[in-house]
Length: 472
Image (cartoon, rainbow, N blue to C red; front, side, top):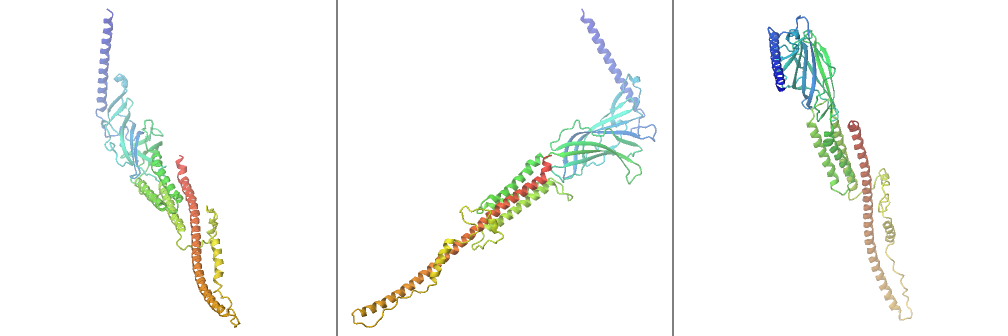
């Protein structure tokens, strides 16, 4: 019983809404027809041709897609917004049931020919998209569209991979001078509210600056709006995959001084690390432009690392030459002898002694014996005849003893000569071994000094070059 009146009310409301919408559509269609009747999109929308059209530009950065340092090119996704006033597109909203804004295709009205001056290759910008433009009853026009652009950008690789870059996007009219189109930026900074964060770059700021330039071709001023995009490289990737391995390679090459001198891998380790650093440096150079203005920071780091590893390999050769000083080593020079006192021999031998004192004592004791000459026979017994039957026997015995002493003397001379040769040979051998041991001890001392020197140099070079930037 009570449902019928409510049904009538709902049906009446729907009917009124439909009629209102149809009326609005009719009003909008008639308004568009009225506005575009006798409208010329090619002429500037000013009643007085001496007046300039004030165009306000706004840019929203949607995504920083890539910065190609090798090609000096920035690729971005932007939303470009234009604002101006068309004096031919005005109406009284009350005459059209309060309709204060309409949307029509932008190619049906006049549009400012704003282009990117420093464009490289632009997808969708050379052919301006025909998106709708919003027109208000007072003649204000709002024309927005998204696009992907590629612009030239001068990349400074001095502090790569801890670098900051500034790329410019310069917009201006291509055919109208400042007396026809007066271009302004809407805000002092670009819109970064909808920016998609980049994996490689951190956005610092985007400032907008208006410039008025007079070119050599024309006396008229040409205003433009330049957006300064300042970005900072995220260096985690390069720290992990390039800088850290380089530091490890340098430390491994320097730690090669800790290997024993007899190890055949002592020198080959340094050469292997050197080749690895050269390969890493080549990988880095492939990612950078061929610039003669500056050497990138990571290039300086790799260069110093290569120099350190090369010098450490050369120092290893010198230390090994000291260790293997040859079959007949000379005495250590006096200016190198103080280094021996920096190391205590484990065998408790005095590092400054080159001779075996025991063997020298034996040699000195044997040598005087060699100067004694042949052993003299005992004095002969008198051969005066005596009235004794034993005289003849004694004479014969004396002759026999003389011959025996002569034979013993020759044998003793031969034995002493052989003994002298043996003692001299052992003396020279022990002297040579003692000198060789001194050279080996000197090589160990030099090796440790070089280890500390190159380790300190590598750490200082790393801290000086990369320390201030790595903390950032």
